[in-house]
Image (cartoon, rainbow, N blue to C red):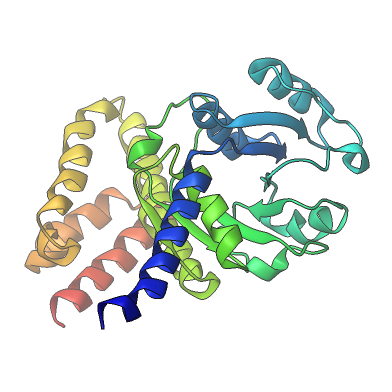
Length: 279
């Protein structure tokens, strides 16, 4: 009976060795696009054993600056990019993924970085993947990639193992995620990042119009995020709307009488908070 398990154990052992060899082997990357996400990924990759093979971008000055920074070749003609690269990072705007990928004729994996676009939005390639860091990237703000979740998808097990081996060089948080599920993460990310940041913009404008210091709010903003390590967002909710303090809300709306947009936002969010409190 013991010997009957040997083929299975041998197969598993071979798979384990193959996976670990892939994780330890040199992986090469080429960037198509030279914007913020490409720059942050290249910076993270450059601190590992990943080989950066070059860059192409329709904005020639940006591409050259990118190439100079990372000391890699700049290929002005997309049809002349090398064909001996493991992974081509397609770091372009969502609405350009299909068009740009249709112009690429390579054997390696073409991986876009969109949270919204489907895996199959990549055209003209048999090897497709998605490498989406769930983070907001600003031009001059460094990030700690080790703490950033990277959502991965590929059209074959082998392609997935390659992008997993690539991504684990820079992050400890890798998640296999389908295109359908990734769309909802992207939608939720817009709420917690883009919309919340716009509320910060509104708060800054309210205070600046009164010559008051916006930075006094920074400890409050920091605490609002840190408490979510221990509480659900619903349990962490505070403020006049959650308490049903109609007098305070009326007072606030009076202060916003000359700011129609902020007044509408305040009213809408207050109603939403109260509706959730009553669920």
